[in-house]
Image (cartoon, rainbow, N blue to C red; front, top):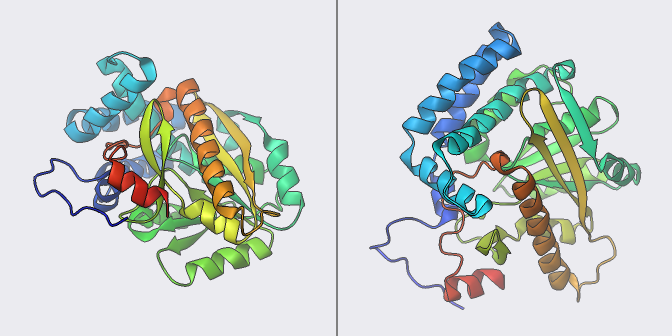
Length: 323
């Protein structure tokens, strides 16, 4: 079905346009401040100073603050307090700062527990490569905690250039052997590089919670309302006949993290006729698992924009959900 032209009087862009167009000013600045602090002072002192950075973006970011409030209202079933909304900002800043320590292999700073680690190890042991599908929730960098125990594990991250800029610089600045290689998406050779990594037995990490422009997406119920989830990551996994694991690293205050792995789908033996149905089921499963961990660890959600905007429009849902 053809899409309707954009309404020139609309107050806000669709979520995909909103997050892609934004240069993620807060993320880049917090990242730079976190690296600077981490290189010069201890983690406990850095985390105290991090309150200043978090407070700045909390006070001077009315748009993200609004969407943080909307998200927490859905989770908590009531209007969140200012303290609860600030906690989400501080958790976000903390995971960015701690990423430096993970990539520098300073794991002794942390109390890290895991759930489902054997699923990842068993999948890797098959030697055929697989996808790790994360979200803007928790810390994806915690996958290095598995790498330090299993040095043979190799991981590549596939991400878009306009969102990977400061993160890529951060990885390059790190001297850690666990820093993953980056595969820039949006280029013709990206699929070839992904295929090559998988054939070498590597994991390919992707984030599956943000749709982009008019790329195919599926409408899924998420936290009680329709939301758009991109079909691209699952379609790539299905085309290359690989398993997909969900991964998140949950920050739980102080120096505590909890890493979770869950099997989402395995496209190894899916027929061409059943592929579309398998992709739809996998996206629904991904959204369900992500919702579970949003409810268990609500302050780990780092999508500071209107995540649900426009997903309930019938024409748009039908067009993008059928792609």
